[in-house]
Structure formats: C-alpha cells, structure tokens
Length: 194
Length: 194
Image (cartoon, rainbow over all chains, first blue to last red):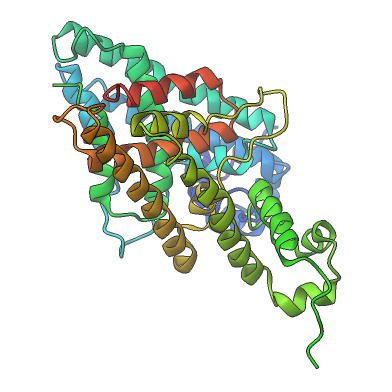
C-alpha cells in the first residue's frame, strides 16, 4: 500500500528554492535543506536522491510560481506600455540597502553559477529566458499597435534588450547598488515607450 | 635577511584569477590553487594565509589588468560613439557555443556569488562598476559634443543603462546564449548613437 506523503510538497519546494536562491547550489548543503524544509532526512532522500535532483525540482518550482507570477504582471494593464514599464520597475528591490538581503533572481544566479558547467541546467535557464523574451516582445508589439511605441522601433529587438537588461538588474540588485541607478537605467531603456 | 620570492607574483595572480573566474569562490579549493599556480603550499600560505585573502588579491589583479585593458578600448577612437560601440560589442563572446567555456566577468560573477554575504567584496565591486559607469558617461558626453548623440539624451543616464546591460551580457555569455541575441540587444541600446 502506497503511503500518503507526510509533508507538503509545495512547501518543501518553496523552502528549498529559497535556500538555493539565497546561497546558490554549491553553498547549500543537504543538511541545511533537511533543516529548512522540516522534512525527515529519509523522506527527503526518498523523493530527491541527491542535491542536484532537488535543485532541478526547486528551479522548476521557481518557474511555475515566481516567474509565472511575474509574467502575469505583463498582462495587467490594457495599455501594454504601462504593463512593460511596471514589470521592469518592479524588478528594482523595494528594500533599502540596510534591509534584508536581496536575492536577485534564481535563474540569473543559476546562469552565473552553473551555466558553464551544467549544460542541462543551462538549457533550462535559456528556455525560461526565451519565455520572458517572447512575453516582452508580444506586449511591445501590442504597445506599438496601440501607438505607444514608434514605428521605427522593432519590438523583437527591444525585447532582447530588455531581457539582457533584466539580468543586469538582477546582478546589481544582489550587490545592493543604489536603486536610483536601476530606475534610471530602466527609464533610459524605456525611453522609446510613451 | 629577507629571501627573494621564488615565484612570479603576477603569474600567480593570473592563474588564481582564472580559477576563481571559471569556478567561483566557493568551488575553488586551496588545493586547486596550489596546483594551478605551481607555487609551493608553504609559499602560497605565507603570502595568502587563507583563500579569501588570495581571492581579494586576484580580484584586484583583475581590476588592474582585465578591467583596465577593457576601459582603454574606450579611448581608442577619435569618435567617441565608435569607441562605445566597439567596447560594447567586444563583450559578446567570440567563440561559438561549442567552444571553450565563456567566463563572463569576474566582477559580475562575484556580485552574484558574494554580493549578499560579503559587504567588503560587494563594496569593491560597486566601486569598480562606478569606474566603468564614469568612463562610459565621459565618452558619451564626448559623443554628444561630437554630434553623435542627440541633445535629447542624457549621457549619464545612458551610461547607467549600458552599465546594467553589460552585467546582463556577462550573465547571458556564461549561459552560452546565441550571440546574435547579445548583438541585437547592444545595437538596440545604442540606437541613440550615430
């Protein structure tokens, strides 16, 4: 008889995701994961035989929750230009630099830590970035149709620019730079949008 | 009597820098550093009592060599707009995605890995980024004076945008994305420059 799982899978992945997000893959130990998730060691190892398997599940959980919620913001306004602006400015950390650490983005952190050494992980991150790029390109095309982006601009090119800029914002956030720098950078990049 | 150092300091730092650049701080061991630098364990520990001390020296070496050489490119053309464009496009990895791993930028990698947990390291990286930002702002102001950047643009704002974009390029390079994506992003950001 299959036993019912004695823990909340989504909560487990939330907690594992947060640990990896904060400390990265290498600096997070299975001991820390057992402690943070509150799941027994044997249950954790039964579901995820090694740290890499758990990491891949946590990365997928990040895509399903954090990334998906973030992309939903892009659909929130009738005027696409307002959606794009809000989406970009929302990436700027709200807390001041004396507050809690800013985690940046798990995808960005993973690209830097594992992009070189883990082709399978790199492919997943590239796929997630393509999803963000496509969502931005679609909204920018709508903004152009709504008259808020001049015909001299190419929505697809601007989407690529914003995708790369987002990675930069995530890096700089982790470093706790002055948030005005990030807002200025975003507003400069969005100058073509009215 | 002080003994002459029996190794080449600059070569040692070159090799340590390359290891940290490739694998990050956490994933580089003192054993690997001893092996890669070719310096005896006792000599290495005498000069650098722990990995963190050696990392800080390697980071400074990166600033003195790689960053400085990169910023010199910004001065190479009479027309500042050509300098800025070449500087930015030079960030795109030359090798294809099946070639050697692209290391991105040690500063970017460090921002992601240690920005949250090491305030002293974060401060050094912020300072280095400010140096890049100032160099860009200065060249963009020259480009404006030379008539290659319209008066409606603010060189200081555009410099912030490019600084953040550079970090994004570095992240994406490490992930081996299609280099056309990076070139498109750069050309889109540099559209105001003629």
